Length: 180
Image (cartoon, rainbow, N blue to C red; front, top):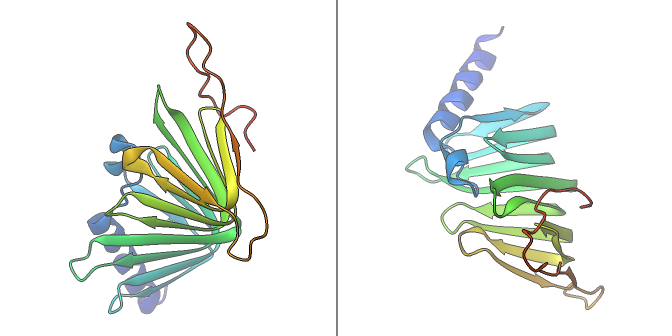
């Protein structure tokens, strides 16, 4: 294996051991990160890593699948943001037994670590516990369990929301069956 390739593999492994990703579920933050891709380019000076080609990122119950994944870190080597691009990029995570799985997809998914905020743009869709929201843009505030959606800037399209009724005396089915 060429020396340069070994050097980059060491840098990438060290990078992920130091920064970690903190998507939704608390227990996921303590789990190791696994990233598979056809290619990775790491710019340590700018704090940017770009993964491309059938990218799969996993940490605990969280999974992010994309054509391209861009990770940015601060000067202190803390993860700042993750941007996934695809046709579509897909996200899923199991939160807890009450809220079940949350998953979504869009042409671009951006995650802001500090604010625990996800932005789905371009044919965006988000599903949780049978409830669905879609539009050109969907915002998901994980720490607040808050969702916002809007149509395209050019006025095209509409926002669609499907809310499941609460069944008296029965727990809501939060399995992902029937979701897009």
